[in-house]
Image (cartoon, rainbow, N blue to C red):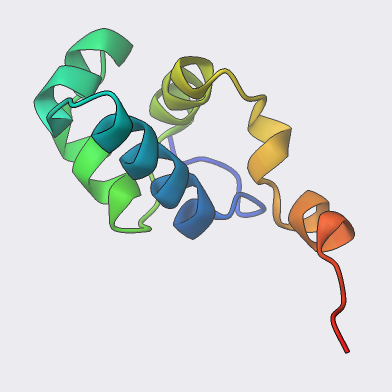
Length: 82
């Protein structure tokens, strides 16, 4: 099952990749911790969609709610610079 269309996978991928690098982990290590396929970790780092189970597992690993990566929430928090 695919995750909702309202999720911004580009931002999620950047968060996952940053946390992975700061923790000195490989993609396969993240996959093992989250109990998801390694391909899903690679896909989300590339900004591509993953299933709802993988989305939830990655958000749990990041200690962020899935709503944090919703497009509407990101738009509401964005600041306008002159």
